[in-house]
Image (cartoon, rainbow over all chains, first blue to last red; front, side, top):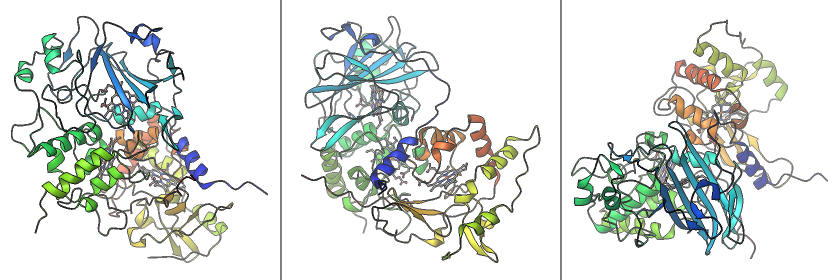
Length: 348
Length: 188
């Protein structure tokens, strides 16, 4: 009897095929994490003194992974912050993000401005002992670590890195004025308390790492102009988790849904994540609903809000973000649902 | 319009031989070359709906490349069981049900609201390079041969894009894809 193709297997197989043939090859990432320069002593994992530790205030949700992040700026260089919302990093800049599940290091992602035209993307997979990490295959690694019983974390392939990181004007997503502001949002989902030595905007300014100097960011640290503390955290979460794609420079922005909070926007202007969502009919319909598009945010009605539905879904055609997680972010959903249900008044 | 097609494949094949695909002359514009590529790469096969003609189903060229007709709606998918036959298509050859749920071929005409009107050349290329909707969204699902088409050169994809900007815009809002039913909870 011929073995019937398992539908799920067929689906996955065909999807995996989707990623093919990238354009011209950029420089290759080093074969081991040790060779990227993160550690002064790879044997003890003592960090290189030249790398700076930082903590974005609105971190990306990745199925509950604990994360640590570092940046290296070439000696004597500074970040060109002439455009407050599109920082230009000097050639040679490197950034790392380490992911741990259940206290075990699983992967360290690496972003490197190797030349003026090339950002190199790579992820390094840790051995079971957590002593060293080697370059993961270009297509990533499926099922690298357990997230929850029966669910495993996948290391993204390099095209997946680009789906998020080449989605705005800058490849770097979490090292920005809003993310590093010293006026940190205490209600941000999964917010970490600042660890001693973590660099913030004030620290960057003090060390002369911003060009031109931005004393105003120290005097009045960037902050989302929201109606309430809860709304501030909602808009910050959406900016950090969704703004990479939902911005004017990305095809996802052609839907009209803009979730990225700009620090350079006019004083008093309504945050885009509010202006383009609350009471606004979108181009996407909640399955089973009728019409062309559901309200993105239906005041007073989280269940009738496409934005909430897509955050909560992990079905391929619905889920948002479209990649990178297997489990919805419960803490964030609770925050967003509360905002929609309790702070937004239904139109009568 | 809902054509119930009970016709056999050979008739379809015979009909599709009707349109002549003259190769582009040397020095042809990207648009001309793109038109040739679209014809020989069979985009019309799935993106132009079939209608019933005197000799059987034929491509409805009044709706050229405008994807699954909105008026056809979203009929419930047949169940396929777990055997050798895992997917099926409508008589228009524009909607397909399988393990991936239900997909509808996209409107490739330049209509701004329902077609590729807002797509830039970059969006078009990224879609094929990443295999994701608009280059950044959900995976593009079967039977769209995105993997094979992605092997085209940048220049060929740019030519296809250039040609698609020149064809008549057809207003046709293709339904959203439908996810497959929730998988059964893993056995405890």
